[in-house]
Image (cartoon, rainbow, N blue to C red; front, side, top):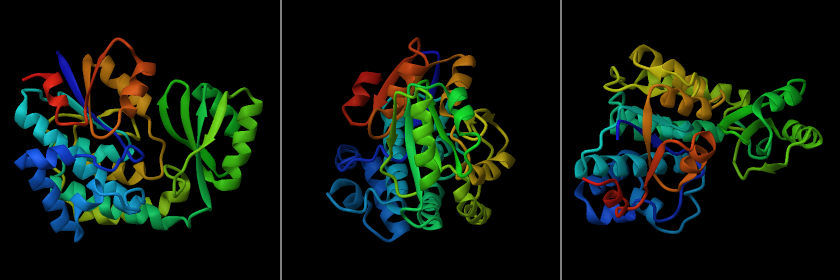
Length: 304
């Protein structure tokens, strides 16, 4: 392994039972989950490990995902010699990258995303906005097709052949029809509670900016890649403005991965539930190594 990137999934990867084996078998993970319960006033183990109807609700999902991924990362670093050269996370996962880079404390990452989730959930009434995944059409063509439709934009550049659009429900439906006419293989409506990463969430981003005023950020110990720019961030002065914009801006995930590869990163370690980012990686670049840490046993695969 030469240059290693730690990468963290976003909302949508959550699953009941995530992190339970880490919690049951390591003091470090148990401490992080229990601290999250203390900070937020509800049981994080119960939210993540037991069947419930809250795990998929944005205001709970975000804190659950960040707690789980950070706990997994801390155990990985405790039990192996693997250290990141750079970190990145898709959307919500960027907060885990901030913790990995020493920019934000674990406590602040967890409490900030709890507020972020509440703000994003509350900004647009359910049913007003929508998101859809566009398959097998390149980004430039999608941009051309939707540029004349107001209230819809690209939310996620995930990988070649998978782009997500977001905005007002009617605008997304109109865009879906036009994209299919223009040759998109499929346009799949996503089961989400809001038009995330669209201008409709500008208000939530601005309110998050106010929350961030009270959060301490430190100079990155290693660079992290910002979703908004797909560039390395090494200056702590950029952190808060970029996080504010991230709520209502496109997530440039494919471009972020390409930035890291261009810098010589040859090993990507996806930390958190699911294998979403590993799937994207196969379509972005097959020449790099991708490892997954979602179960405690996975630590054996990455070695000491």
